[in-house]
Image 1 (cartoon, rainbow, N blue to C red):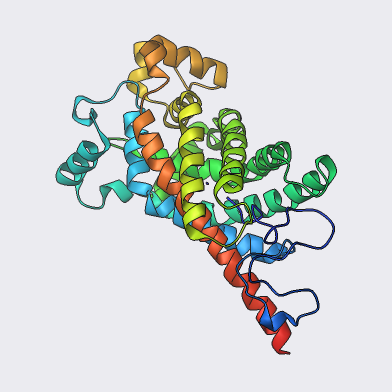
Image 2 (cartoon, one colour):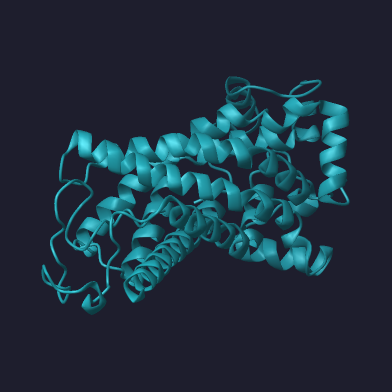
Amino acid sequence: MELSCGVGGSAAAPPGPGPPTPAAGAAAPGQPMESEDYESLPSGASLGTHMMAGAVAGIMEHTVMYPVDSVKTRMQSLQPDPKAQYRSVYEALKRIVLTEGFWRPLRGINVTMLGAGPAHAMYFACYENLKKSLSDTLQQGGNSHLANGIAGSVATLLHDAVMNPAEVVKQRMQMFNSPYKSVLACVRTVQRTEGFGAFYRSYTTQLTMNVPFQAIHFITYEFMQEQINPHRDYNPQSHIVSGAVAGAVAAAATTPLDVCKTLLNTQENMALSSVNISGHLSGMVNAFKTVYQLGGLPGYFRGVQARVIYQMPSTAIAWSVYEFFKYFLTKHKLERRTSL
């Protein structure tokens, strides 16, 4: 959701074979590891470290900004109830809290947390390892933007396979006048009335959106890091800024696909009835046609403001939390190893 420290290999050394160049203040060759000024991450962080840091980052990313995500889902509705038409994110949050209760914007957050941990653990681990392998092949001793984009895209396949069912349940519970009283009730009802396939009805659309989203996101993040943190030190400010810029660019570019995904997940009855669609809408092509029928070209950009406002802090949070935990866990392991 969401980010890497492999953005950072060692201080001045991109991923690849050969000894890293010491960062400013780092231990010179031959010095004991205890005296290292540990400001950057070694490129050899373990798989467990990537997974743990990724899981924490994913949960933080999705939970901190969850109320804005709820607003985004409603603002992407193609035929919203008159009581659920909003002009801005702030107005939407205010009206939801005042008319539906203080906790309403958080409805469905538990299923998101349940899916985000394992999804992001696999996502980051896959990204880090694949990025390093591809960079060594495509640009030995350098940081390949093509490798970053490919690694992010492949990692998305794993991430979305876990998160798609959670997204379906979450978005149905976020909608105005949602008939579902709990996550479990939603899962049971969807399974009974629409079958297991309903949880993956938007999977191809999700991938069609997330593959370019993550490719743009990772390439932009790595590019920003090259500009403002070329030595790849552990630098929270640079991770936050790079993450926010990457999230905004990727979010704006892929909003049309997100609108189609939301329609497939929510299966808006009013919207589908107005264009004489009976049963359930399926497939990306049908979703694109339906969105155009209902809203024309502007329909593809419904909720773009909320999407960008959601993604900027979300990706900033995810990157900064991920980089911190990767730094902390790796440093802790090295300290334990050298103290033995």
